[in-house]
Image (cartoon, rainbow, N blue to C red; front, side, top):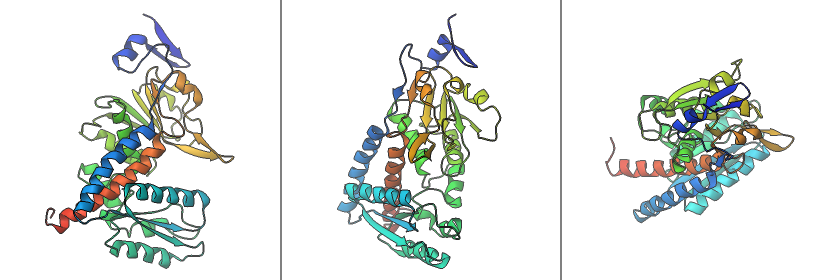
Length: 317
């Protein structure tokens, strides 16, 4: 039987074809995050219109503390996204000399604002301020990032809760392109709070877009490739430039490049360029996971507005 070999990885063509991903002689197809995010926005636009027809304008808030340039640009993008969808948005900015009490008070203010259904604290905070202290003051129903202990606990239990934006976006990205992970082996490279840990729990849930066999590895593992070469799907989310290379990926596997770093002012992916020669599907460094993260933030805000309306009408107890 003809075999494919990439460095230490070896697999029969038949085995790769059985997984349903291998296309001989073809470089990786693109997991297009812009197209998938647009599909999410189209759905959200209809839901926003329905809420507005009932007198509810979904509201998204942000709290930016300090003068970090990338953070400011990211917050501006979020507010543009909100405006495009017809969401009300509230932007709170505190200077680099803000105190912990001022940051906490900003959280309390948005918690109490009925026009804001969900909000985020933009990370990082300036040195000397405790981001976690402020974050834990956010009301669980208004947790637009889906990262509060309360909501992560509900995720683990399989209960309804705001989902972490990037993990939820990755599942939507794969589903949009017809890539099923149900019953397949997914290796998540990275154990961070924003992607790795919540994604692993989300993938393992018994739901149509998940139901996977999940392995989590990280930079503390000596031979990451020993695990990734067994995967149908690899999600790189460690924040280490070029960590996942072609010899670490089985022919025909799907690779999601979720982790990025800034090197000399450039955005660099966790996934090396040569992976495109091995993978069947690959998300690009730009226009892959990023648009999905932003789209799912908007989705969490609309979800929160719908929950608030249902509660006000006695639909939820």
